[in-house]
Each structure stands twice: as C-alpha cells, then as structure tokens.
Length: 255
Image (tube, rainbow, N blue to C red; front, side, top):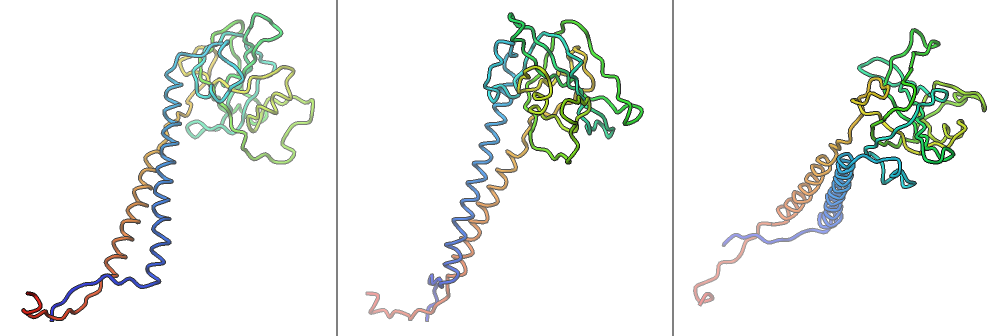
C-alpha cells in the first residue's frame, strides 16, 4: 500500500475562511489608503511651510488653501479686544495664550483686515483674579507667522460664557465664531501663530508641528492584516490536506 495526501476541505472551515479572508485583505488595503491620505496631508503641510510667505493680497476667502501657510503682515495691535485663552500648559506650568487682533492697513481703511495673532504663552498671574501683564509694541509692526485654523470641537460648561454685551478678557477656548460676534469688526477666519524668532511682542512660542507618525503606523497595521490573511490561507490549506492510502499499481498496469 502506498500513502498519499488529498485536499478535502469541510464545509464549516471553508465558510469561515471564505468569510474572514476578504475581511482581512480589505482591512489591509484600508490601512494602506489611510497611510496615503496621511502622507498627502504631510506633503501638503511641508509644501506650504516651505513656500514663500503670503502677503495681505493673498489672504482670500479660501481659508482651506491657506492653512499652515507662512504669512507676513504689517499693522497695529488693538489691545482693547485682546483675549487670554486659559488652561494652556508649558513645561508643566499653567498659563494663557495671548491673542491680540492685528489691524492690517489696506488702501481703503474701511476694508482693513483684522486678524488674531497668537503671541504665545505666559504664566498665570499672582492669583486667578490677577491677570498677568500682556503688553505689546505700539505703532506699526511687522508680523511673521503661520496661518492656523483653531478647532471648533470643545466642551463648554453651561453658564461659563459671559453675558451678552459684557466683554471678558479670559476665555476657556478660542471660539472664532463667538469672538467675531462679540467684537465690533469683521475678523479673518484664521489665526496667525507668531514665529518664535519674530520680535512683534511675542511670549513663549512652542507651536506643534505636523509630523504625522500615523503614516508608518498605518503601513505597519496593513502589513499585520495581510500577514494574518496569508496565515489564515496557509492554515486552511494545511488542515485540509488529509492523509490517504492508495493501492499499489502492479507492473502490468503501469505498462
């Protein structure tokens, strides 16, 4: 008797494999797609950061196309509508971000551009009731920074906002829509993060950079899903090859 192997899958392992294998492969391709999306965002950020700084005439209505771009502007600070955004921590110390509107002079004064400048972090004052000094230069200054769209997703406790008509210098979050409703001028829908080397009255400026480590993570996850799919296929094949006995052929049959 001669021994051999035959492939004889049963119904339930076959159904399970047919169901799981496309799912594993699909998850792998989905992770690769996510990695490509993140890579495109990273490339776009790098390209905008390395492009020549935007000027006043470049600041149009398409704010999505300006996000992360460098910018250079000249104007005057309006300290009457400066705000301190609370709960900002630097090296373990609580403080504020100082945001001051900059009035960028245009040829027509009625159409001046007013844009918020984040001048950086300062620590809390002596107490929560004593605000720190957040003075800045008077007169026309040159501002260099990068454009940034603050998030609109945050949690606000009921009653934490000031009454209508009552100006509050300390805010829990930077809500540009709320700010635009509470000031007597139109505000540009992006904020300028003042460059660390700018001398336009800045404080501590350590801004986050867009360095997306998820590109490599998504690719690693894709490799894991594909590896699981290959492992599943190998296990399915190996478990369904069964040992069988075959009758010996006599010499006359082989002729």
